[in-house]
Each structure stands twice: as structure tokens, then as C-alpha cells.
Length: 466
Image (cartoon, rainbow, N blue to C red; front, side, top):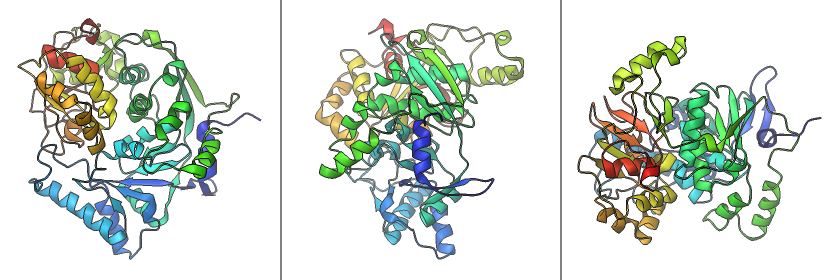
């Protein structure tokens, strides 16, 4: 009998019941909620007079709608203010812990979970947000759910789920200078397309993945969703355990030793069989930038946008439409193209390592006059670290401003919108039409590529400035 995968081990431990010929009833260890997808769920519970089953397993934080300036003032956008206030009200009524706007633990839900030790190996974690896959970096089954499912988890602490297939993506070898985890995942998506992971839960493995820090691993798992996967995960190891140890809500003392012993049993067995297995070489990856309107339309920064006849016939029409929206031509080089905005932040690249990398790159240089830059920490704790480490002063000396935490220009649900027709190099996760504001044109990239654009005012290969 074949060994078990990391996914198998966690899934099987959490199945409460199996519906014959149908889905499994899965127990959920951690439920994260924010202001956008929870109000309807709470309203549903109230209508049916159902109490939240395990309020202590649910954690709330406003993040999508919050401003990234003047957070001590009342939110002036009416809808945003309503949603944030509604979350507070629902949490108070149901006894749920919420880290509000000025709380030292406030931040993007997928940033605060890991940094507080709420995210741990072996867990099942859900949130009404597609980028919940971020938490899979710890060796957990983490995925986004819809509003009706949020209601189901609040009511039962369980979820009906059809078991996905498993895929392992191996990246082996050494990364070249200037290549980050964001480049790895954008490269994988460009190779597999945005539908390449559909129906699968993906485990990322290989020497290049194991060499990454926890924050870099979170970036990889965060964007597994952009290739259509149900979620992404990385087996826990010493890097994982070292990161979790000592955090606010991590197990302590004997509990820690017991948890650690269990976590060490989680990695996929050597003879585990996956439904699909793919291999990539780390040395084939260079800094990646997107040129189109989905995250799969990415390319090595030193290359050229494909010609129409290089694209599969079935995709040519959408390819041409995408380039029209972006104002680019097939065959163009990306280097030298105009940049109007640079956004560093989001649940993909808003952690302290991202801010450090960006700051280190721009230190001693100056922001280009034609660029508006938004540098947004992913949480109050990241902001605090950035201040303590002197990153704010270094950024300001180079002409940049450190804003306050929130989802910001990732999805433009607050005031941080890219104006119509303008170009943004963004460290976030999606570049769909209008994602960062009506008519906004988004190019996804790593914090280093964003930094290179910010100081030159055009798309620039970061390796030339390192």
C-alpha cells in the first residue's frame, strides 16, 4: 500500500463523516473572517436563530475596506464604514475575538494568522477569501470559502467538501540573483496557465522551495489559487517550527513538545503517490512580470511579449483583447515601458521581509518623479517592525512614504485606486481588468522588480541595479 501525502494525512484526520457517493463533512480548526464576506453569513444565522458553535475558533479583522491613511479618524466611505461597524457588532453579539482598526494585532487576515501563531501545521483553515491558501505554507489544508459556507462553519464548525485530487510541483536547484519566491510562483503559473491546477490541491516541494523563508513560502501558497488550484501547501520542517515557536498564540511548554512531535509526522511519505507530479528547474527562472489581464500572462522580464501566432488558437482572441486593454503590442519588450504607480503590499507581499527587500533596494536612490508609490505593511505588527528597524526613515530619504496597514490597492475596495488608463507595477496577486480600479492597468511583479520600477520610472530588470 502506497504511503500518504501531507494532504491525505490532514484530510483524513479531519473527516467527521462521509456522505455516500458525495462530499465529506470536514472539521475546521480555524475560521478567519473579515468585513466583506461575513455580514450575510451572520444575518443568515440570526434569521434561523442559530448560535455560533465555536466562537473561540473564529478570529476577525477588518482589512479589505479600511483606509491606509488617518486610521484614527472615522472611515469616510459610507459602505466601508458600514461593513467594518457591522463586523464589530456581529463579533460582540457572538463572542468572537476581533482585532479592530487601531488594535495592535489588526491587519490583513492572511498576514495576522501566521504572525500571531494562529496558523499552525496540520490544521484545517478557512476564510471567506480566496487567498486563504496562504496558510498552507505551514503544512495545513487552507482554502477560501463562499458566504453560505462561512455561515455553515459559524453554525457547525464543519464544512461539506468534495475531496480534491493531489498534485506535487517540484522546484529544484538554486535560484539566481534577483529571483524571489514571487518570481517562482509567477513562473509556474505562466507555464501551467490559470487553469493548470483546477481540481487539485498542490504541494510545493524540491530544494528551491525548502531553501525559502516562511514569508517567501507564504507568497508561493498565496498564489496557488491563481492557477486554479483549491489550495497550496508546503511540508512543515525546521524553518516552519522555528517561525511558529514563541508566537503569541503558539503552543507553549509541554503542549509545544507534543505539537512538535505530531507536526514532524506530517510530511508526505517517501512512497506517497500524487495524482499528478510536475518538475521545474530553479535556474530557468528569471524575474517575472505580467503583461496581460490574468496572472498566467507572465514572462521573463528580459523577454518579449509573445506574438499572436505563438499563442494557442483557442486563446488568441482573449490574448489580443488583453493586450488592447493593456495598451501593449504583441512582440513588445517590457523593459522600458512606462510606470505610473508602484504598489508594495497585500497578503502576497506585505510582510516585513518584503518591506525590507524593497527598502534595501531603494536605499541611497531616489523615487522617480513620475511614479506614485504606495508602500503598505500587511499588519500593525509589520508596521511596528518597520518603524523599529528604521525602514520608514530610509524610505522617506528615498522619497517614499510608509502607509498604514490594509489590503489597499490590491483590490481597490478603499481609497487606494489606480486611475483609469494608468500603469501600476503591483506586488499583489491579481491583474484582471479593473482589479485595482476601473480601467487600471496592472503588472504583477516581485518587490525587487517593483523597487526597480519605482526608482527608474519604467519597467527595469532589477538585476541591473542590484
